[in-house]
Image 1 (spheres, rainbow, N blue to C red):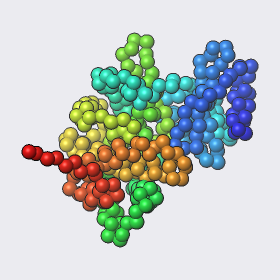
Image 2: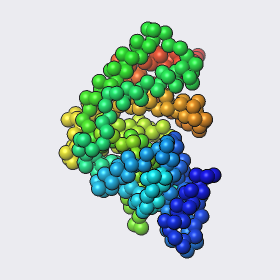
Image 3: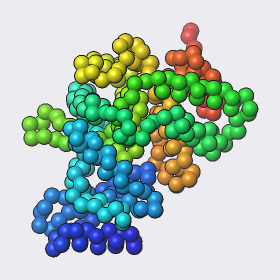
Image 4: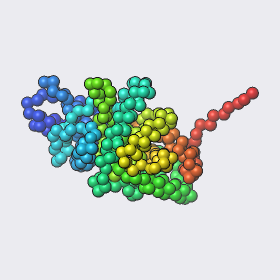
Length: 342
């Protein structure tokens, strides 16, 4: 409550003479909170970010916002800031996420248009990429993410202690995954480019527009397929593999024309995409388990089965991932459907 009063006082001093109401706008997996400010005089609503300085640093958010905006992506405009208190006043990108839009409108053609818009914005960000501007998605960071899996998912969530041979096998598999990830060409990477972080912006002509992009503060310089995995192997919504493959081919063809550093052969590009997905899904299972056991956020438990299914499907396709599949079967045995013929 004290923090909320500080925020109210800051907003009142930033917008003198304007009466406003504050309501929760959204929350994420970090310590940041977002409020929507609405005004008695009918002025456009605003979003206020509350990022406690002892927990969150808003400077990376501001830096990435500037980079992405310069690339042509639609990110919130910064209207006022107080770095010492951890408050930002932002333009409002609306309250409809891609996830909400896609789940309420069961229209494959509409979904294809929305994803085309998202790919257009992603390609613009990637085309603006250059090294030395964002932190590198290096081996140490990728491995640190993978280690969330044995610590939080295996040991804490499943209550399983791996023996020495299993630990060695898991580490050897991690090495193979990282070798694939680190061999990819590098671009700017949002790191959570999925349906909850893309806002639906409806233009007057109804023909589609750049989506509003949020939650980009952890952006890095890393593998080109990473954001595509976030988008198409989304932890919160499932698409047929045929639909994903079609969009992925379209992206690859366009990326080549734009001069983005994708693989010359689609089969190689698709393998990169698949192996990048393995890294992300292993990480996400660890993060979701940690959010539950450490932070008391149980909403992500319902999303674990889809992430596990993505991981298991890819493991079945590649012989080098067989040992990981065997471990997954021990942690979470698959339901075996028995059929009878007469």
